[in-house]
Length: 144
Image (tube, helix red, strand yellow):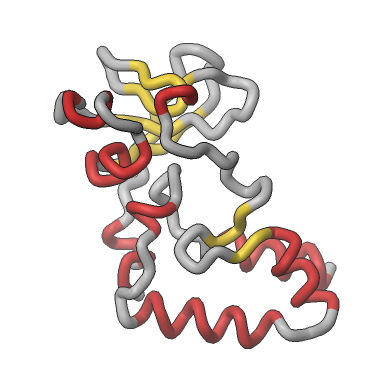
């Protein structure tokens, strides 16, 4: 399924040294696109993790580096306002679509784009994770 193919998703976890939240790994490509200039010019090539705890000042970290949220270009907490970073679908827009029964067309669009590898989760989403699971969770919550 393109960039959201489970085989291509890294699932390494590590604990945030600041808040002790469980964090998932991200690649250098994600950091290069989210960390602001000039900090993004000197990032050591290491294993980095993304902390999505909105109360934590740390955004990304490795075993020796910590990148604070104020060093990011723009930060939106995952699963708060934005549901799909690739296609600019907010949580509110998707909830509205679920309510008026038009969510299927959004799902079809996202699936078609990801199958054609036209999504950009690794670059657009600060967590580098695919949004598809979040869409599914919202559907289940709405149906339940």
